[in-house]
Length: 110
Image 1 (tube, rainbow, N blue to C red):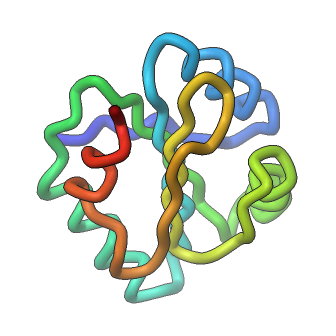
Image 2 (image 1 turned 90 degrees about the vertical axis):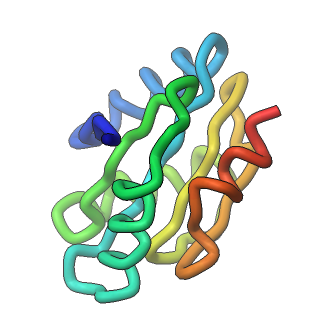
């Protein structure tokens, strides 16, 4: 089972960047009002087996300003739902909508 760490502050982005130098970090940008986003989250929750990745969850509805900061920080256009894989302080992989899957994330950890 996936153990999400909640992103609720801009300071969490610095924490993620720092942690990503030793452990890959995943940011999942989730819209609680979107059925596709709910499907993507369920797929991650049900299939998660990436113990080497620290997963972070952002509620886009509650924290839109943090989502905007993620866009600026990592230079990745906003989509919802969306995942960003962060390693060594940079985004090495991102995808959105129904392309979000544990297997796609796993392929990009290397």
